[in-house]
Image (cartoon, rainbow, N blue to C red; front, top):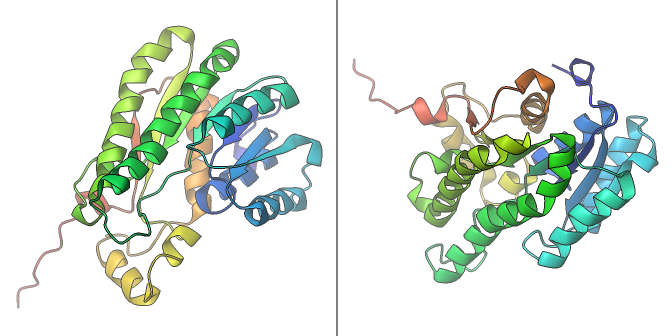
Length: 264
């Protein structure tokens, strides 16, 4: 698939966590496919990079708006929704992509860790959704949440992140029924291991860790951010107009694989 496969002319898309990785790839794809995009991140440098990459695709700068801030901050949340509506006049697609799995304090079972994961992975998407509903109802729009396989299977090394993703998946299921009468769809994309800065910057011995993680994936590789962006575009498109409340898992077979012993 490519941008030629999708047509988002006249549509307006908000993508949180789009200063790098999957969100950045999605912002580029939607913009190249005709949409106006609001990009978001905590890094001014990252936002500028995303902007430059979009501009390199010959997208006019008037179709790009950026909001810098913590996605968990209510001021940032309101800015994302209200500035987008003011700048572009409408909102068609909300992509709750920003998320996290680790705090940097070393204790991944602390209450601070739990608060962090719930705030960024669950409460922020719910808050943004509630703020966006009046606009999405007018356009009969849709919502996509970026989840993770940990929402469907236990990952004890990141237990709190896994718990929060399970909540995010159930959020989509419950809100699908709530939002359907308004003409709004909501679905989750659950990417497997993806080659992004969030992965490459997390481990001291990245090659050793990557080899271990890839060994758990039947297809034998990490996903590319652009692959996940194309799934987002499909879910947001009219081609998926009858789909809501679903968790779309794209993980190279990770969840269905149990490594087995080789017998001579």
